Amino acid sequence: MDPDLERSQVLLEQVARGEDDALGELYEHYGERLRRMIRLRVDPRVRARIDEADVIQETFVEAAERLDDYRAKRPMPLFLWLRFLAFQRLGLLHRHHLGVQARDARKEVRLDPRPLSEASSHALAEGIAAHLTTPTQGAVRAEVRERLQEALDGMQAPDREVLALRHFEQLSNVEVAHELGIDPPASSKRYVRALARLKNVLAGVLSGFDLARP
Picture 1 (cartoon, one colour):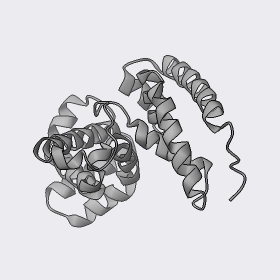
Picture 2: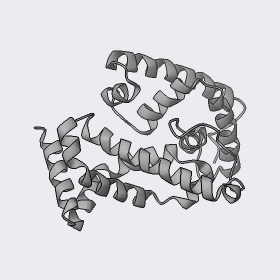
Picture 3: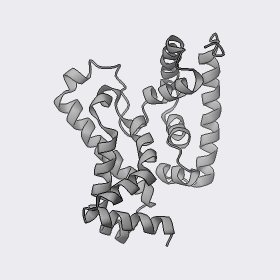
């Protein structure tokens, strides 16, 4: 057995026994990867209402309770299984907040109509704009983010998704292939094509901006 996988399963068993230190070690090992997924998938309308750390901790607790079932079936690599559980939990929180408090939540930010299964173009644009601009370029960053979001909305959903998985969630090509239900060579080709399209989008969006100035 993979030593990393074996250690993770031991930690999940310790979580099931109520050992808090194991939760901390799991969080250190997987927390940031899960956090990247949550940031991309959370609906902007309820971002302020959802605590990423709580989602991740509850995911580990659920995984500990379902570890025997995972071992018996092994439906996917362990991290992708944890990511799947976190994804499901995020979906439950979306339904709760947007169902019970939708009227107030819709006033918070512009709507993103895509379902949870797709990365938010708002989050993608925010991440790209932050990478391209400095904190002192606040007004420029806001305009770049707005134009990027509009451009990303115009891209095909599979292109946005493979970019989100590879570039923002930083999944490996093998992990992305598993998530998309295709083989690794096809996943790699899809990513290269999507990256080329993103570069074209960026060229159009950034024309007229002088990002070298603070």
